[in-house]
Length: 109
Image (cartoon, rainbow, N blue to C red; front, side, top):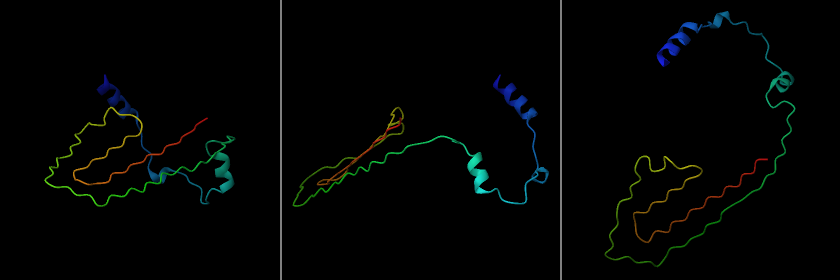
């Protein structure tokens, strides 16, 4: 069925060569563009909120002796069923300061 639909759609398709197009010699004015664009007569009120994350971690004076570090593996498809915002943090060392911050504020009305 798909093959039949693809074949029919290919047979019904036609092409237009560039020399067949009739274009004006002058550029379209901004007024014409403003009147022709999408979202015409739609008023959108925007409210802006600035959020920030200030992370200032300090790692000093640490010692690590006779430690064993492993491998970090993130296999293909590990996030395949996730939705929304994902964050992956990996560490293969010792005495590492890891900081992460995600700030999302979305309001659609």
